[in-house]
Length: 290
Image (cartoon, rainbow, N blue to C red; front, top):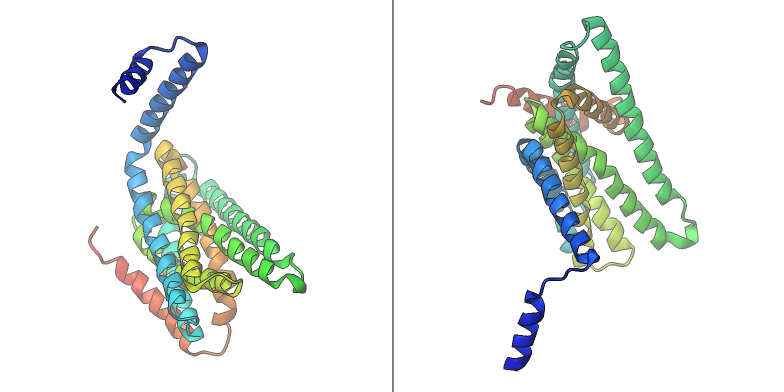
């Protein structure tokens, strides 16, 4: 045994002069340099990305956890959480994110051109999110009635893919907006019923309650990745801030209009009160220090 160990140590200590080894060393050194430069440019914004992404991922996990013990979430509770989150998102997007994006654009162009550019960028953000959402939902619609299990799995995948742009919006707003915490909180409230929906679909597809809950929790990790992507892009170039904020605002306005609009136009009741509660919570965030 001693001889074997000594021989192994001698082999490891003998330098490999082959071209392949030198190539791997160069690649490793280049990767270290690129990683160090990237970290240097993005370390501050990435911290905000971790906070935003961790928050929305945690909310998704909270929504998925009950599936391990109970198989239903009261519909009124799910709708109420979504409406409160929508009220927060609407207030922060219209009252904070869009004005900050416009102010950033006016530093490099006239106010009129900045306003026109803002409208175009917001429209692109809404269109991009709508296209992404439609593509994700098409996955769930392609399964036939005889393939219900496959359709449920595709539904869970579609909901997971939809989390990516939401995570990007949370990361950008947290890293670059003074009221990013409020917008992240609003997104988090909406993610609670979404996490439950993913876990429920996995449960109906045949997964055990524990595995279904874990799958729902894992779907929130996509938002964490999205938040880090958005925050890193902002850290690489601060000049992207108004553009990224406007894109995030467009995506959030699309979500509000599509998901909350039909409910708000219905008969006045609890849902409208929940939306108003979200508005008041968002206004309250403006009076918090920092």
